Image (tube, rainbow, N blue to C red; front, side, top):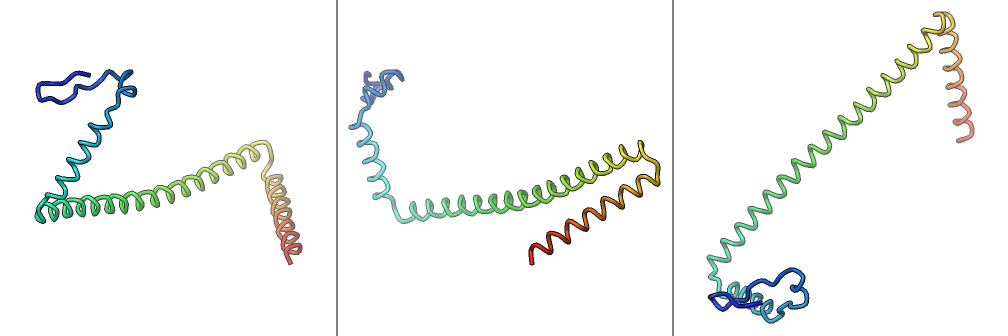
Length: 128
């Protein structure tokens, strides 16, 4: 890589960049940053700290907003899943009720209810 008009190195093509990585240039740039920070006046540092504190406060605010939105969306998802389950149940009942008479539907619901109740009692008895 050649030098520009100010004596700085020109960037290398990407294929050659890894082979020609200039550690001296990296060290020089890091040293310049350290010296600038050490030479900064207290007012400069206070301004930097104030800017960082403002950025942190903004990030916390966004975090709170996103957390609240996440909670709201999860609750909305639970409601939507419940509504979907209810709609599926209604669809299932509607499909069965078209094939059966009202008396047959009542009988079937009674059997299902008894079966569900006896399952609960069995699991309760075994849990004791």
